[in-house]
Length: 131
Image 1 (cartoon, rainbow, N blue to C red):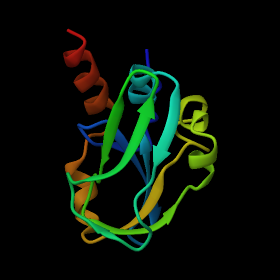
Image 2 (image 1 turned 30 degrees about the horizontal axis):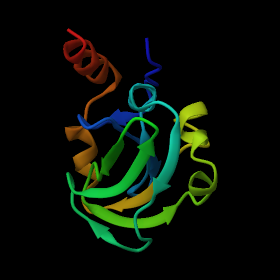
Image 3 (image 1 turned 135 degrees about the vertical axis):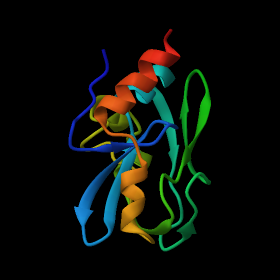
């Protein structure tokens, strides 16, 4: 079973968000997503200070199996990216909720966090997908 921290929010496209306060969130991909992809060999991060809309592809992770878009889970502005994962993509595999984070955003609407899944909702999503 994949790790699903209770303090995070989740998008149906397998991104997680950590609320850092003041409308800022850190974003990465879930343990389930990294496990499905396999060993990552490449990470393309979004442009810093770029504005993104919820649901828009804004980054790419590539494994030996496949490339996968990473979607902005909320509307907002990219304010920082984790350059360390471009040099060492395996960090996303080994520590998806820690050192393997991808970017931070300033949300347009803090209320949009409430529209995302909680840990139980995300666990249900994975269970449903796995039949």
